[in-house]
Image (cartoon, rainbow, N blue to C red; front, side, top):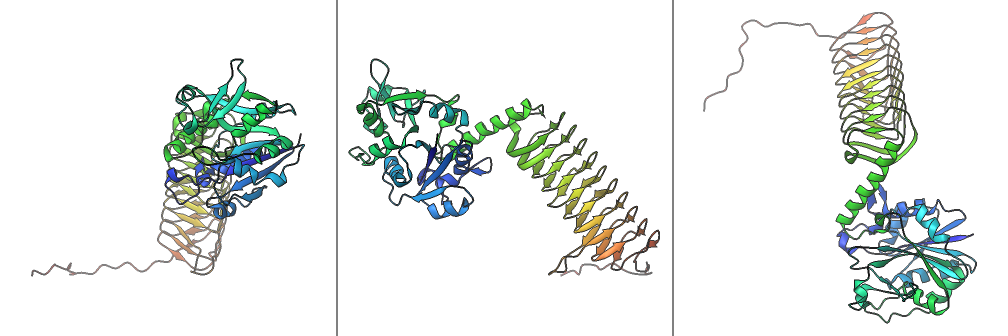
Length: 456
């Protein structure tokens, strides 16, 4: 079955009160439209068409990597008019699936159920029963339970407005049928728009059976029109994510206070995650890992038996087995730590490798550095890697001991088993197994008087 998925993404979203097009607002750090696209890509033999309008150039530019055909709806004349823009791309034998760029949480399971109802004699419609159906098109059925039509809220009679079953707008139909119906739509309604829902009555009149299915959860078909709805769908999505993590065996001390905005290449056993932890990008986490509160992990690899203490940021980094990070540590992109490395509070590491057993425990900046094994770096150490134009590398060889408050002016090499005295500024390579220090002579001045504030 060849599927053409048409994603309607032309709406302005005035109730969002934002200069940003509605479909670019985000759930779990992905745009609403990206969510819909990603789900669509799970369908076999599927071509995706995106109908854009308000802020369309920004939408196209932001999501230019999407494998889709973009068609502009220059005038906002309704959903039927939007689908009409794709008329020339629809083949008679296609199955056409209509989705919405501001309905981000629809699952592939619901889509598969919908597509299974499409034949040459039937079209498929996703409906849902709501306690408060206000604002939705009502599903009008005959005494035998067959659908006769859909009536929009503003066109519904008092009795029709009491109907709880509503139209989600999500449907699937054969290509030749939808091409026929959308060219016959009129705008004789309260909104003076070309409603896609009118094709339901056309289908009934043509003897086509309307088969309905329902999502497993109402939240799947909820759209976003304002910030409150966006916030609600964020929580729904995060609940899905944390439920999945716990099914994989991850311990979440409070699932309501963990956000997963990405994916995982792998998850080991006996992972424990404290509150307010955020996962972003694509991460790999090994066995027996503990992650402290208020930590952000993005696009990183965490090996077995790692302890990450509270308030750390680990961004595009690698942490080796049996290492301990934090609290308040920051690993920036291309920080690669080997096994049994200790990185302590207020330490920042960027574009550096740290070999087995080395320790950087306090208040240090390590950038563009190669650090050997069993190195001890004292508090307040800085690799001065940037001259304002270019960056240079610092190399600290195995077994070196760097005293507190040391500045290493790159490019520089600290020799194997070398010791750097505290308070030094190192501008030249230092020899192996020797003490190197730079320090002014200490003096005391007799009879010195502190300045006294003058009286006015």
